[in-house]
Length: 235
Image (cartoon, rainbow, N blue to C red; front, side, top):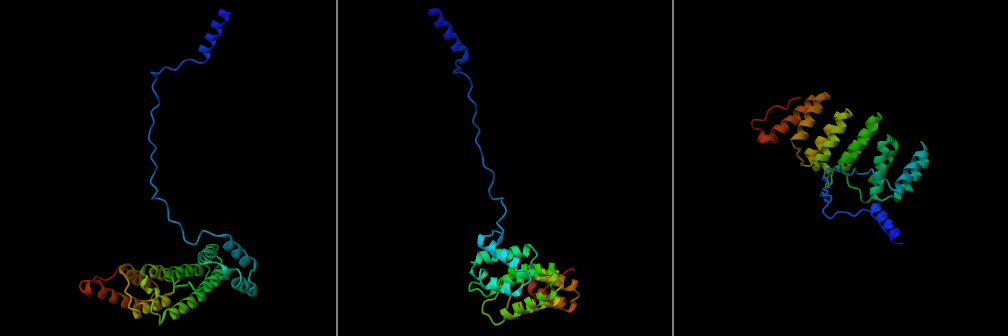
């Protein structure tokens, strides 16, 4: 029995060798998280809710039937909250559905929360321009000018947004609309910054609106250092 116990003990030792307390323990390295501020910003209007998706699908299924489209606009679309309506508008623009997008844009303008936003107009102009809907751009700008006249608060003081709108109008070849926008800014006492001045001058010259470009350049010289020593803006 004693011999058998010794053999069994030896087998245990072989199977489960004792660990030495002097063995070096693994070194723990600290884990450092990478920077979190380099993530891209969320894009407004690209997160679609279920309600927005259903409204978009209903509008697309309606095809070109104006009666059905108007019924959807006055029904499901009218019940969308602001963020969902703007998201649906951006998605239709992304899918190059400009006529449906224009319907949603006009519906948004009737909402109580609506405030004129030059960035929204710029996106709408770009969507229409991609689909060669020139006359619709003219109507949109005309409505915009009429909407802004006589109001205490206008969007012309949003210089960055106005620059986006002017850039989209220039890309669409709408020199007359750009001149109307600049006239509105002057009537409402809004002064562009240097970037917008240069954008207007170069864009108008490129479209052949030389007289208008010269007028803007004169205003730029008055604005820039009181008109003293201002160089001509290069084309």
